[in-house]
Image 1 (cartoon, each protein chain N blue to C red):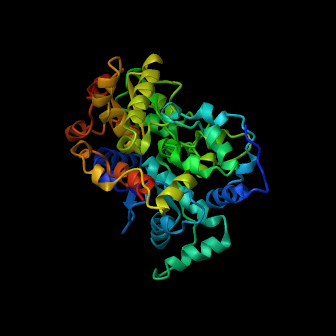
Image 2 (cartoon, rainbow over the protein chains, first blue to last red):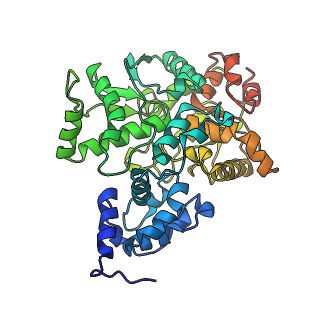
Image 3 (spheres, rainbow over the protein chains, first blue to last red):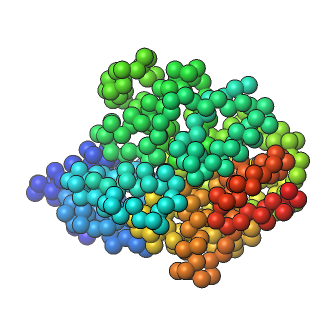
Length: 134
Length: 291
């Protein structure tokens, strides 16, 4: 496990994530309740607990290269169960926001025109576009 | 009495059965729903980035409309709309400077956003204001002890501050099921996510969630599921056809809106066109009521 170094500039990246999410990410003590609670964990390449630790270490490049923030469906199980009171879903949203604001979306509108989606309810189309399109 | 009502986009489209059954049920219970005028999309998902005020305007403008049309309570049946409207309201109220900026964005409105409309979900309204005892008295075709699972999903229970019931052990939908003469069965996955919008992105996530939720309900003995979310309904009902290809032992069962079940039990008349909006035929539920 890495050591949080307050002097090497990595703190700035963690603070950036804290500002965007509004959450005290350094408060995470790595208990893993988030990972254990996540219904989508099987499809994540970076478990939620490890993602939190990488953000603490300021290693955002690795976090942003992972698919974990995109696989998160914002169900808030991790947020309501976190014993440190961190709204982890907001941290995931911040990771997505960093990518989306750099125009790196997960979903392109062209893909959504698939005929298989013809019977999709409007809330599915709108929510996917809002969450995943840059 | 009359109550302001926010249907949202999907209740005017793929979930017309949810809209129509809500109106019928409330009317039969003596509450006339007055649809909010000039409502717009709620945004569907609450924006959790701290600095993104623009994405809060869609939900908050609806609440401002409700204030302009008499305020008080606003009934919102769709779980996504309910969750988004209430979270946006709390977000705006949490910080005076933020609230000021949000008001500035809506400068062209005839009145300033106050944030005092009470967003209510029909399940909580039925329990707290109408009373489930009164619902029970309105039942004309009890459901013959049919075993039904209440699927809450995420948005009725999380975050805890806006939960329609105890977020750890909800029972409002089970109590409603019992009032309608059916037998509620609790199952482990009743408050776990259906995969939500991942249907368009990580489809495997939704397919597995569909399989696991239905399997959990099936193991507990449920013959059908109830929901209040059109996206959960889509993932759990319409996606069964595709999920069974990946999971041949998928337990198929109908998925109904809780208001549809009320229509059946209260003898208000099931509309044949509602059946076409379901992937899995809800006929077994109708049969249980002799409807």
